[in-house]
Length: 142
Image (cartoon, rainbow, N blue to C red; front, side, top):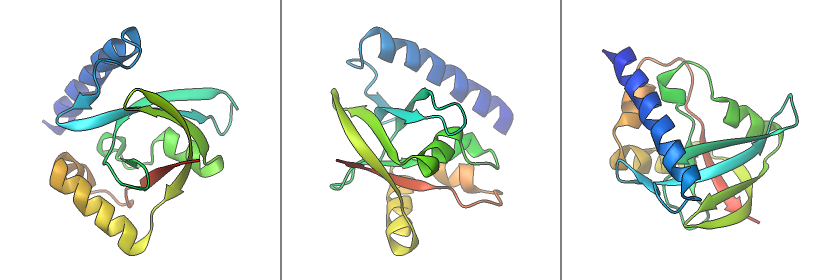
């Protein structure tokens, strides 16, 4: 059942991605009640730009993204990319911004994680049974 849910989620994100790019980011700004941003990182191995769409939690210091990797027991590639090169670009609310990724730790991470779970309990479902701590990263505008 969990694998079927992941497959459906991946399919939904592919459709969402098509709508987002076809509209220049004007459509598809929310998924399951959460805002969406486009994140452009530099591939840690390739050095090439990598783009993803991801939901985020609003925070006054910058959007907070959660590295669930759909419940897989490894961090997503974009997290590794940001760890290698924290400077990135992101588009939310229709505007591009240069950002610096800050991986949250301790109480700050706990507060952001709890806020994310209160908005979308899928995060808690993804965390169940993982041997890794899910990364919580704030994208601070530069």
